Length: 129
Image (tube, rainbow, N blue to C red; front, side):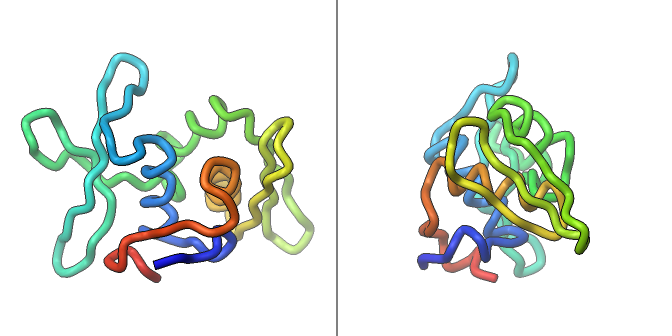
């Protein structure tokens, strides 16, 4: 299912960020190798980190978790700007793509996805808002 980057939220946004980071493969973050997989808990499907042993470790939520989204913002040189109406705007240094959202992390992750995948992204049906 195609969705506009500006409309990505929740698990759909986190899944799109995972797609940018991994392309579906394992990615390296510092000295730790990660794999993000879609996993269903209580009927809700979302991205999760998986250990080498195949055990689900924790939810992958860079759009709400600063310990996951913050390093992406820093590494990608994403600048954040607060607006007077309570929204935030993000832009990647030397890239025309921007993101807007109700929180700094949502704006930054939309910006990151737009800079890597464009203005529309393909997401699995299970992650559709």
